[in-house]
Picture 1 (cartoon, helix red, strand yellow):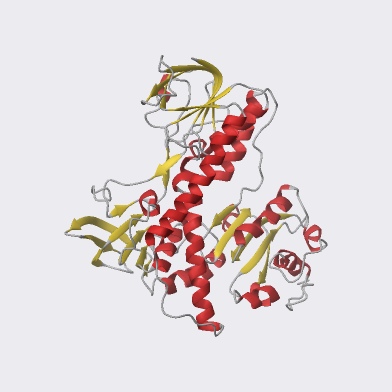
Picture 2: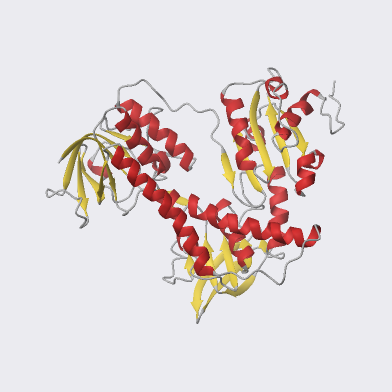
Length: 475
């Protein structure tokens, strides 16, 4: 079987590439090992985790009504874990069904199989699905490699027990354990830890670094760290290494090493969330000209081309940041390149969002990066305590900040912590991509009272003209 364009992987990057290539009039086939399109993001990542985070956030909001607004309910919430799981699965089913319909309408063929490269223009297909051609091979003119990533699980933690989970296992929501240890204070660990804590688990978080979310600006992390510490009732262990993990009866015994915490404890379940690794092993890439670096990423240029003229790479396998929205845009670039268009992936700002409560989001240059580069920037911060909308919602611990070039007044980066930060950051992405100066933002009328005003207000801080706070411009 021959198809001009084959996409290996049906995640957000893969199906975006396939659909756009089809829209460009090309004959396209997706090879995907899963029975449904969507990849990690939809099946066991972004979407199901956000569905569960919605439940956690609403529980938190109800608790806030009880504590601060005089609204009472009878008793503690009762969690029907089967119903929660079923609702989460329904969300996935709705979206995967939509993707299948879109593929059909675009005449994109989908083969359910595991593909591996025989050479630069041939994939061998493994599996027993009826969609696999009799030859069990497919040849192509161009292949878009979009195999994504999987959770990292070091051998010391991989003890063969279902009580030790990665993010995929945690999202299955088999039960609500009485005690849960989260190894890793990155965004996945904090998101899933928040979910289980709100559902009733006693959660402990252990992180090797000095702070949660290593790499994020400390002023953005501070309000979240305070919230996580309260949610975990003080069981956040920083500067701490996990020495060993072992199953003891119906518990998991974990030893801790470090100045902040030393000794051993037992937990009902353990979530290992220390990062992800690209899926480039076992694909037969050694049979092609594709170059894989020491970290397992495929080397490619700004047009997503690899060293093999027949193969392009997108998404998690193409390097950091390992984000679904980055994969989608790279997929579109790859499709247009195959269609003969002179395009490159030249984004200035790729937003990152941590969907905890409060959310953290940033785009463009961060304050930490500016310091590391020795780059002079003006950092303009607007506290949400001065926002009427934030006061009305009782979410005054947030902040919005811009990083501004002091010579040109162009906005270089933005950071936000607070409710809905992931939605608010989109305005900043547009401003950074367009090369806006601060006055472009401050002169744009923002609706009142909204949290979006804090982007305008933070810009006004740069000029010393913010109405709700007194911070004159230094001369």
